[in-house]
Length: 315
Image (cartoon, rainbow, N blue to C red; front, side):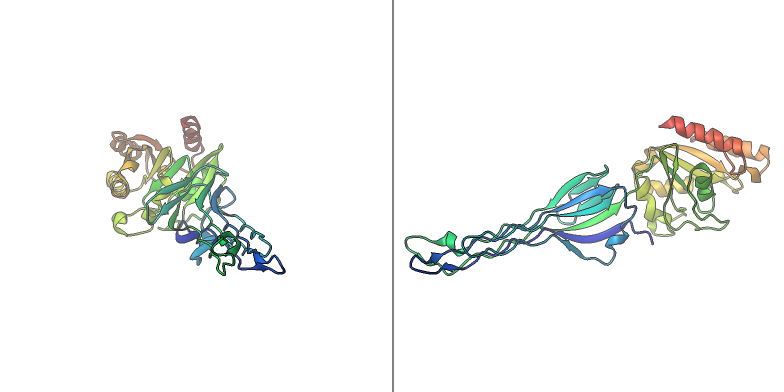
């Protein structure tokens, strides 16, 4: 299971209640202490997590409450602060204010919920007109915020295209990835990452026509290429109409987020070993008026090396 989107409430601790207490003896009087502050809640980015699976089934995460005040004017202990670890590339959206919180840097730590103030004990209410107050304050509630949390993979390059155009096989050949690849649509059901010379490539599940209206799987994962520097648009060389394939994907990108089609792209005519050289050249010419085109095959070492050189020089 790969979870990249959740809705959850984050809450700081409540302040502890004040104490009602009286010091016994000849000089008796109120000695109830104040309650402790509730713990603050922080979020922190870590590279040790790659998804949001740990939060599935959770509705609220809370920091500890402050402790009650004690006798002899003793203050209650402060609730411990809570740090919630999230993957690098996580974005939190406040459901009420629409504030966006970005966790795009390793170890970045942000305070999101402030703990409640502890209540005053009865000694705080002593006055000449009320020498023996019998009441104390409850602690204040800690801040609670409802968030929609999205994970957007931090990658340098994104492999996009229709289903069954060879994206996963290409990722395996270019990088140290070992993802499932097969000759049928929708083998890839979640985004996959690979590393090439310290640069990250994301393989996005295949788009289909109508994806932006809910068809297929790929539109669900397009958030993972919003931050990439270069799109590697894969089109199968043995397609009946490479222009239709290209325009189909561009249309879905535009419907999802118009800024995606403004990103720099190159076209990879994959599976180039499946058609003859003349047909390959014709299809490349059709596409070259849109983007730079590479013909490539996982069985052609030279074509893979040329692409690696280009990718390494790009960023």
